[in-house]
Length: 152
Image (tube, rainbow, N blue to C red; front, side):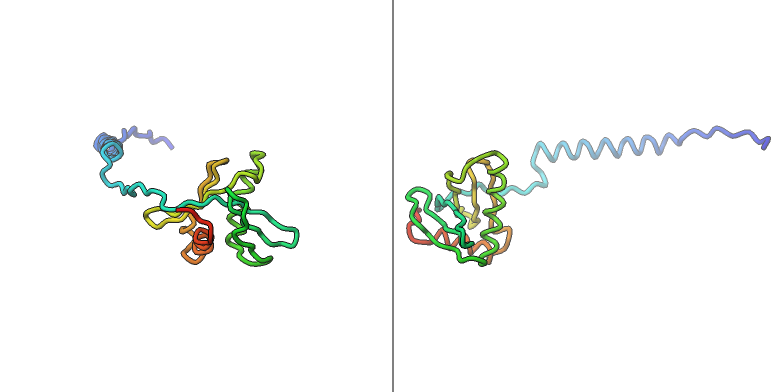
């Protein structure tokens, strides 16, 4: 144990190389962010058709869909059916309950010019892109959009 520990400094070349690599990464990321190089942008879509809808649970388990402006019944979803529609609505209603917002404000179902379909809650600012769950599930809401009484 009488051997002295030799002091070996960290190689300067490796230190400068690492610093240079970090600097290049930061400059490259900043340049890409500012110039938009390497980013994909979706064109702004415009609403093609909108419909205001309110959803109400009945005691027998059915869900009644009302036209938001006229309170006319658009459709009655039978008990135990259409789990996707029920799940989406319950998720949005949960956010409303957290903020103590009532059920009298209708949701807005929107078909966009690029073919997307979304359900918006103007009271919470929440938007659900329905096509993200597959075309079969989105078709459930598209059916409501095409039901009698929809206004383009």
